Length: 360
Image 1 (tube, rainbow, N blue to C red):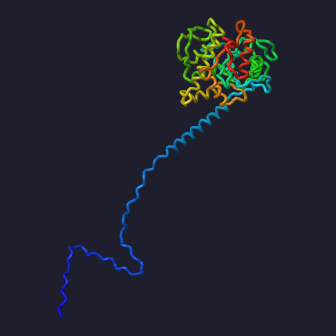
Image 2: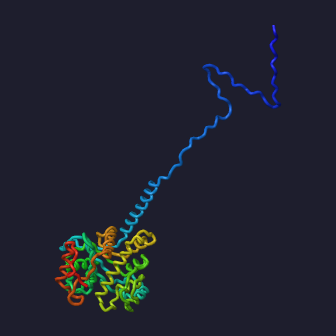
Image 3: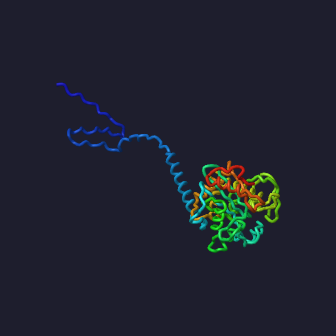
């Protein structure tokens, strides 16, 4: 019987233990996990998340729209309103008619402002400017009504039309706007839908808010009574120069030239007010809106959206609209009845007046 060969003993270096063998698996029994941390598994790679620009733009537009609507509502609540339109009117017409009134009231001007602007005493209650803006299916039409026109003033007889406002104020209860509207409706046969009045203070604040008005002046005018000294040519009119320009009568054409300058200036002013450079500039539109809300007076039924339509209609006057003065037959006192009737009859049915019906 041969002896079993002796197995050689492996000798490990000092400090090293022999590797341990995992215990044998027991059938049906729980398996023991090997000691130590679990093996590291690489995290699944995710694609980078792209920004949702549509959602961001939609949110931004929503916030801007909310702010615009909120600001418009605020401005609407601050408008100065008067009972200007009669509850019942015999006048009827198609389209929309705005009566634009420039009051020469100096009550809100300081003594220094009256001296700087050469406006005179604060007691005046006349309407310095009277215009009728018609808008409808065709081009906008802007009609100047000469302030010295002799018309029938309800309850007061026949007088100059610019005295209707003051006579209504004297009747009590702030009836100036209402009497003026009834006078214009009786003289023209047109129903007035909106009443817009602005005084010296408001005029100055609006011109200042838009940074002046660009206008081409056809002739040089010097008028110390209106604090005006202006050269001919295209230029930017500041508040004092603008006010003097629309008030002066120191030209050969006197009142006719005056109403022409008023129409040209107001069209240029509202064209700048409604321009993108103004409406998209918060540093311009905010002071403009707040200044307008405190400077103008409107009837009870006029709101911000009506004023926006008014501004666009006035812009339309500059872009192919019709500008004219009521035809007169002797100076600026008595109207040319037949031509004036043709002018207002055309507007009543929302038609463009013919050339023969237009005044100077």
